[in-house]
Image (cartoon, rainbow, N blue to C red):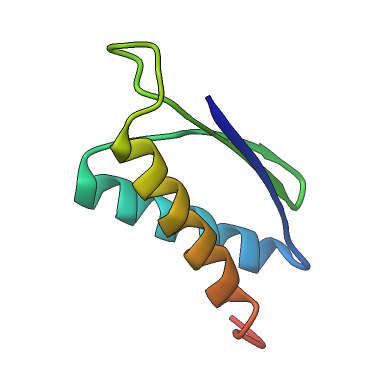
Length: 77
């Protein structure tokens, strides 16, 4: 399982991140487990059908990291 945590300066940034992750997940039809706690989001990625990590998991993981990095360039939402 790939597990990552992302911390946000504001609730607005966190919600933007979640929405972008959901959009990307829908595009590739592979959906992570998201756990939301205040301004922190935990993401778990693995393919349930085989109970292992696949290329879809690593691809989505990279995309999620890029989404998070892009948020740092947004001053206000």
